[in-house]
Length: 257
Image (cartoon, rainbow, N blue to C red; front, side, top):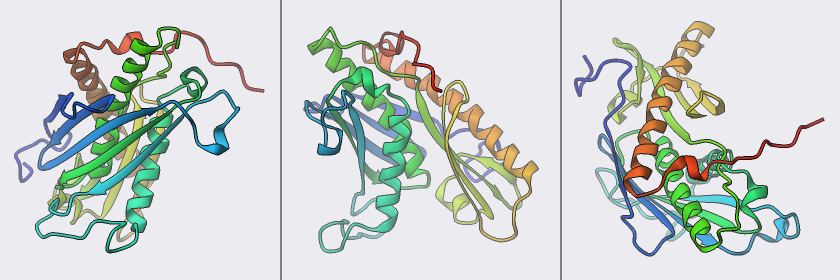
């Protein structure tokens, strides 16, 4: 048994509170174990200069740790100190992951920005931001359809993320809390769709190199966890009065040469 009583392949129980931030086009307060993330989605009817005239939309993300997300206060990035490399790397990951969930040609020339604010951190903040960020994104897309019914459904598939790792003496574990992550000799972050299509994998071996069998085991555990998370995303959206199926793309993507 793990420190919190979970099985090795068991997720921390997620909680989605949609509509937490009333002014944004989509928002969710997401709690998973001791990690709490507020994600808001904002719609802008323009695109960045490099996208103008392409007939496509843009999805981007920002990520910040609240000063008291950890045990002691830390200065905010971008104020008394420059935006940290870790922060930049994570928000780029979130942006890439959520762009994979959208057919940007169908979105039209508009931008959706996902702001992820980590209120409390206990491991898995980047994966929690992606999982919650998709729900906020879907709510924002729904708001676009309500204002502009001619905009076709543009979501490709639900996207979620989870961590996994090898932690002695337990072996392979899913959805690491901080105390587990800090001791892991292998640490993996997996982003995928609910159907198991992989968007991105980030992995590190802190000591000896990891063999293929262990990597495959961690990936398989993660994909099963992501399937569950995507089901919970659908349930959270349904609880907010939004059916994910109504937002999913209904036309086949063009064939590539």
